[in-house]
Image 1 (cartoon, rainbow, N blue to C red):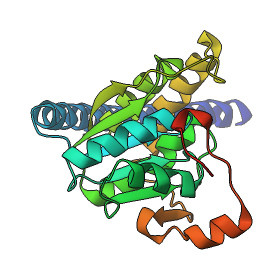
Image 2: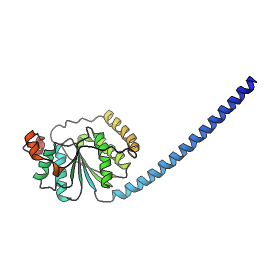
Image 3: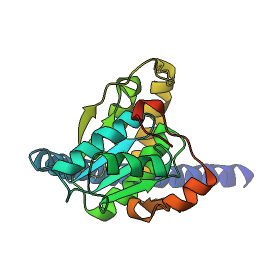
Length: 232
């Protein structure tokens, strides 16, 4: 009796294992089909977006020269929204736009990001909310190729075409790139490209440039990067 029970138990366990394996195969097959359809749809969206005009400017913080460049672009394209991710102090950016006689209405300052990865982490929900399909990414050689690859992975996953614009810096940049740093950021970008389809982090510190209180900043005191040629 004991032997019969053991044989029956083994048959039952084997049957359950086969059923579980078949279920996993079906789930894997469904996942592959879903990913395949998603990749095809995203690719078609990107090809279409690549031929469209720029929907928005995204400036990665790190050099005031990038903000000067986008202020010059704002004069030519006043209706195109601009997002500056953790750039120079808010009053410095306002002074730059005023010095360039550029429009202030369509400029937003995101001050939650503390790294290049977080620049994209917080920018994706904002750009999606704006309905952006093609973004000009403004950065500098000291951010390459890491920032470009991250942008192409993360924005591309949301059907947003990236047009890099490289602004030269003066002097020795503070940022130092390495292949280890690039590899780590690209790897987590691949994971976040999937997770960000579901998770949409919100930055609680986004300011419209027209709302920057210059009187309060002047009372508090601030310092602008010397490359901006501003007096603060």
